[in-house]
View 1 (cartoon, rainbow, N blue to C red):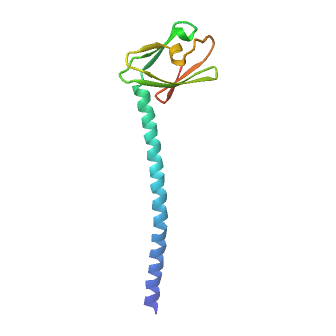
View 2: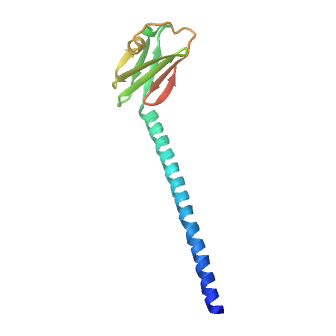
Length: 128
C-alpha cells in the first residue's frame, strides 16, 4: 500500500507541474511577442528618422517664403502640417533634391510670424 501511495503522489506532483507549465509558457510567449513587436516599431521609427533628411529654410515670415528641402536620397512623405493648432492634412511626396515652398504643400499662403510649425514627415514630427 505504501508503494502505491508514493506512485500516486509522484503522479500528482508531475501533473501539477505540467499543468502550471502550459500557462507560464503561454504567458512568457505573449510577453516575448509584445516586446518584439514594440522593438520592431521603434526600429522602424528610428530608421525613418535616420533616412529622412529634411531641411527647413525660412527666408521670411510667410509660408510662400519658407522652403522644405529634401537633401537625402529617399523620398519624404509629408502627411500633415500643423500651424497654430490648425492641421493641414496632405499627401505630398518630396523627392530627393527637391525644394518646395510650404505654401505649395498646404495650398495656402499664411503668416508664420510668432508661430510654431510642426511637420509630420515619414511618421516623425519636425518643428520649425
